[in-house]
Length: 244
Image 1 (cartoon, helix red, strand yellow):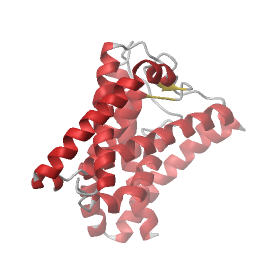
Image 2: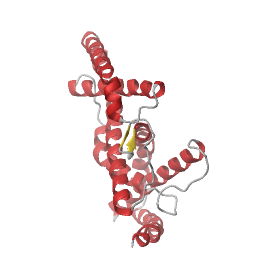
Image 3: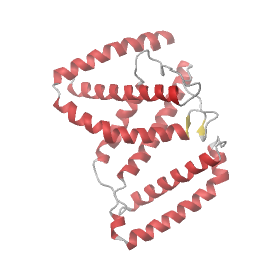
Image 4: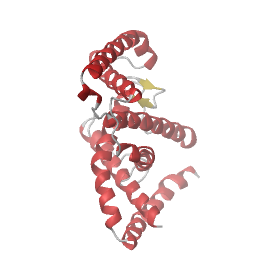
């Protein structure tokens, strides 16, 4: 119960953060810019963000606490390619925004991306061998950013697929968005999840790691139950009963 309450409170924190992000994004960024209660629940929670956060913590929590430098050839290669690809594709996005399909992007700009990556890899490799300080550059945050990008993209794709096929509900449609895959995921959303996920894992999570161990077990269980029971009822009335 102690561990479950910790996990559940963590789940709720990120589910609330996700709901706030989605609502504010729709309210201030996406036309017609008005309040929309995102998700399938009535309450201010988006469970996909809570589950996503727990999955990220499961895979990345220990990895984040260690230092990973360019001295490791695997980390060197992954970090440079990831950073170069991110910058290159972002430039393409704002200069040629009408590329919707990933295959069209690779056909039109794949060779340029490959050449750019090779050049940057060679330059950084030469610098790494010439200057010792370059070898010690900590690239952990870049690796975490890339991992979050991949994991959250998979979560979003699977969630969309399940909601579409099982519940006949399509909460988002990226058909007309830059670099989308089967309208379920796209470049902008995945990038935003990676940026947001990295930010919160390095800011919110350290606070939770300090607060939760200090709180009394009984208090945490009570808080988890107070939040959990209404959320469960919300889920039953607004999801389960509709499907039945």
